[in-house]
Figure (cartoon, helix red, strand yellow):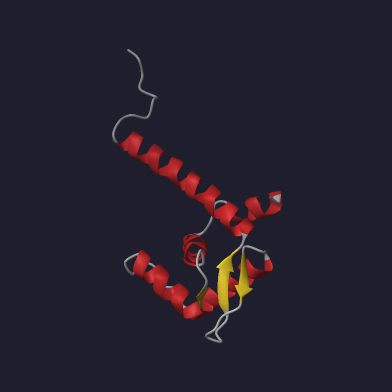
Length: 114
């Protein structure tokens, strides 16, 4: 994997992360917006400007590609590079979550020994 892409995308913004999740299966722009909104219980609502700017960048960087669609709409799907970065970010977030839970529950491993 290209080191510069890891440096550019990790840590990932929430909108990038959810957009990559959305295009695990081929989706057009509006379907991406609906998927993200539904998955996050409407906590994240992608606007068209935000989405299409991001999709353009992700396409240029090779994280997603435009695929053929019967609907005539531009449809996007994650690439192998995008999948690799999504998996790296998911693991990073999992470790971050585990650290937070452990500290909040008093199991951070740094308890002083008196």
